[in-house]
Amino acid sequence: MKNQVRAYYEEAKWLQVQQAPTMEEYMPIFSEPKIVRASAIVCRLMDDMVSHKFEQRRGHVASAVECYMKQHGASEQETHNEFNKQVRDAWKDINEECLIPTAVPMPILMRVLNLARVIDV
View (cartoon, rainbow, N blue to C red):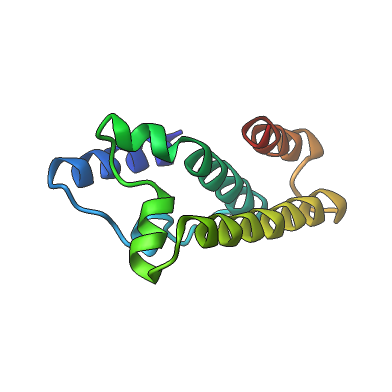
């Protein structure tokens, strides 16, 4: 939750100065376990693909879609294709983490999995 609040605070600062961050700034490399990183990718990219047009109409900070398009000179469709690939790869990581026995109890893994499931729907 603290990381989420920090991310929202960064977005508010970018909006205040009218700055479009790079993808590296928007999606920093996480040091959390693989399943948490993968869940964050699913949640962030899926949310941004669905909501970026609405958020731009209301003057929201740039989403991952706009950041990627600007940084890579990609079209909206190319950006969606790339993000869908990243989401598919993230789901593979989530599945792998749930199938391979770890020191993390399965009820905790299920909470991370369920969060990604809700966002994906």
